[in-house]
Length: 446
Ligand SMILES: [Zn+2]
Image 1 (cartoon, rainbow, N blue to C red):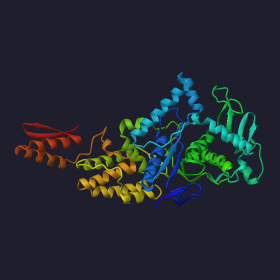
Image 2: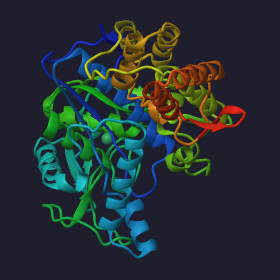
Image 3: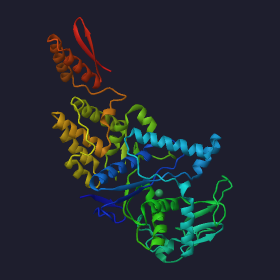
Image 4: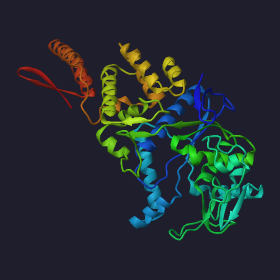
């Protein structure tokens, strides 16, 4: 049984799908203008594990994660670099995909781009205007937050004007503090826009996700995910405008949010300048090392990021692969250990699931137990442990290497060269190189 902590109710709840035959999940993707950082990596990793778990538990899952390719930061970059907008967004998107691939993250089922869904946004904004849930002011279209009675349901924000039940003029354009832009006119800074009934302009950020999740997953979805920094205003506003049309309380039944990343006790943010880019991490460590480091903290908690966390992740995976790789592994894309599934199904408790993995690892003693361990690693976490030794030294079990060398020596004495060669190859596959000299055989790590 899957349980998830639902931001909507602030409670751990049993997951009850709308349709058990087809689960729907939407996660907010990156704004594509720069190299991806660990703050982009964490939701991709967390929701990849949830996706894998859902796919194991249910026959069909559709996972949509968008690309935000409309943003001033994109336009500024294109001006700064003297390249086209398309150049900035396509390069950043490719970069994001490349990093996700290194991290062993599965492809999502749908990856819509905001720029390809402008017509849908215009349609939803028109519907909101027609229904009297939005208004035009100074060439902008605003959502009227008072038209959705549950405004604040996700973030628990009750503003003063809502509490007082009165309207407070907070700016020349907006009627209320919580009202937000659905469509804005072309700006003086960047001459970029699309035709609309309200003139050439562009959509607000929140309307993008409402439209894309509705288009690809339907009016009511099972799970909506993202980083906790998106709860307000992004998700609150997404939900308000979607529900203003559907009449529902929430358009997602479960809102799941991952915690942020701390660097030396300070929240990681671009404004502080303590951002960690995935490229820099993966120059030094492998993708599986980074993924394990992220998953060793429960998704809802902040991660205190450090080198020690990565080193520990690397040591664990190198130890795992060091032993598992000694056996002839039988790859089975359908196998996962049930006890690990149960641990993970308790609100994506990856640290708890790793505790079970450690126990399973201690029981690895033959090809069959090694294969079960390996398949669980790959299928449930996407932890490609065979890649963890890529750039650093492997954890060598010296007694095992010595034993293999004496078996090889015996085979050579028996003129069983096939066995001797097979042992050399097995060692080589584990990163050990042999050298035969007058004094005997010596070994070193590749
Ligand atoms: Zn979003």
